[in-house]
Image (cartoon, rainbow, N blue to C red; front, side, top):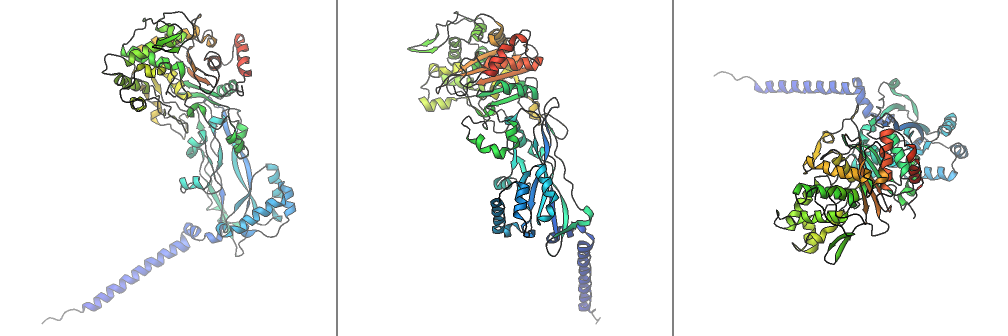
Length: 613
């Protein structure tokens, strides 16, 4: 019989070989990690190293013409590493910084109580030192072990406009850090409102750091490897806005002493040229928001509330433009159709009042004179259209038409906290009055833009831009394409209404007559020779006080360059305040200056104070 080979010796040899190979791999890896790969050593040996954050320069915010709206300035934070502090001259430090000894005492007690949490980290002792104070400290820094300065950029506002629009930057809190995991740490700053918040990721840049060695006594000795492994901060990218800085500034001046909004849009692009929420936040308040925050937050006029995109107002008579277009589309009346008006629309023992004017009138004159009765006839015709089985069915179609203008939901702009307003539904009225138990006259207030309707001034300006474009709009937006920032494609898409585009010129003729039609025109105060302004006044009822003044307009009539909505709270008739304000905005934008003949009007508007009346 053949002798079998000694298999057990073979297995031992294989096992020994495997162990030797594995040991070689481990030794080689350890050699690489501990000797060759310096980056691993840096990460693993943090107890012997100190990382000093280098904050990036935040990107600029620029207007459509290259004017800088927000830039940067240098500020200095006084940092302290509590574990490195020694006895120091408190009086001397207080003298340099202009603070009391109790401030120093409270801070040091706070650090002592949180020493485990702080460890060897540096924390802010005092923020935003002036260059003068920082220079004084730097000269005597050696007297205060554990203290050092750290430079950072703060926002600067070279152009006095757009405070409410631009937003502010402030230190992140625990909640913000938690929502943005890994992106921010205590002591970092971020945009909290406005453009600063919308474009935070683009503007903020990327932090860098410098690495220093710490000795056995926890004292910083020197930079590590002559800065070879330091990381440079990457500046944030600039943002180009659609705003015209000079028009924004002028619009804010027109609204001084008044509560309300101005929104101006370029119809051909949806770019927002000016957006004012009054009372405004002044740019000097943005620069030091911490000092002004409580004052702004507690102001009864709510300057931190962006009325232009957050206030849902009744649109008033400007809504007649939509009802007129729906009536024409549905064929319930013709432009030549005349309806009577005897100081209002009468149904049963009820009445929707109207001002005194000639009667009967056709569609063009109804817009020119803003006749309530005419549009009550139109609205009733829409809901009682025999083409539909019921008023409720017709109302459902009316609702779809209205929403195709962008009303009833947020437009999707790039402005934070935009709200959607309200367009009532069939189900809403069924719930309120009982299913199929309401009629056209039950909701007749919708004929003149009252009742349950709610629109933001941005909605109103967009409505006007839609009419100016003869039936379509672009989603309004504040940010332009630029190097380092591309706006979403949705801002370049046309949104068409459900109204035939051929019908819009009929409405535009009425809007032209409302401004330039002479006798009976409700917006004659908005006429500017040569500009062909087309507009529509509105007076929105206010159950809590004086009615609100509303006006929308665009110009020129052909190839429109600007569409404007003005809403002045407690301003009364649309032609009294809103119309002249809008016309001044249009003239300023198209001509760059106000004509001499209109200077008295400009002065009246500038000096007009409605807040507190």
